[in-house]
Length: 387
Image (cartoon, rainbow, N blue to C red; front, side, top):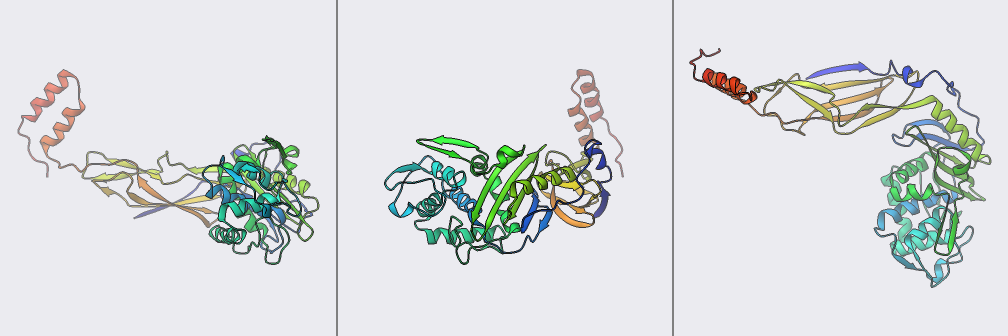
């Protein structure tokens, strides 16, 4: 087994360009808790009291929307609104008992208008009752690693036992941005469905170029809460702030800091060979190995990424395409960040070597009439064996 460690971050400065200077120092915020993360890798780029449990208000509704999007396969299906689902406290999409609305309309009312009635309607129609749905919310939170979170309702109204952290909510936000339905809805500035018009409460969609959505919140206990996601040059960042009286400004500050200091770099691709391994017992001398997944990671200009290959010195034919060959492990400034399995890209057949089999292989390679005749004559010769 061979191991090789290679520095691959030393030329990173070339990718940053020499134009605008990076914002090197993190900004001063009004938030009592905040976090900035890379949306695709989860790397934390800035954090302040990120594990402090706090009331979270209507950003709760991202979990409500996620569960609905995962459980509903047909968003055009109609839902009949029950009397108990109407008249919710706080923000509303103003559902009326007996009316029929589509599941899609409920999701827009939930995420754009922040309808507390929409949250109750979604929970009840999805799980049968609110209590069962809340249990689902807590189960899904544990699956996402939200260990400092507990939900007590689907809308985020102040209630004992309803809390989360900036870090946990960033995990939820990353999962939501992977969901095509949710990512499309939260990016919508305004929409009219039937007789209702919805306008997104997230003003950063208008105020910050590159903002692609998420969710606002406010209650007396939680104060202003906000989750947003922004994209520049294919890189996506997520900001979560809790109890922040100046949240629009703080989010813009964190995006300027994050996008200027870190750039996403691609380190391996499933379509590209990592290296070649010598093959024995075959006319094929080498076979390529490829990673089982792509890997990109945000790096600052002064950071180094290294990788270590763990592969055999050679492989004996037959080799099966897709079989595990070894692994590649990436380290950021010496700390392991990712290990990826390497597999053989192509199958290699085992060859039984004789003089005539070798010449037969040559014959198969040549297509012209003259070379075919020559190779055929060579096959008739009695050649000494090779020891």
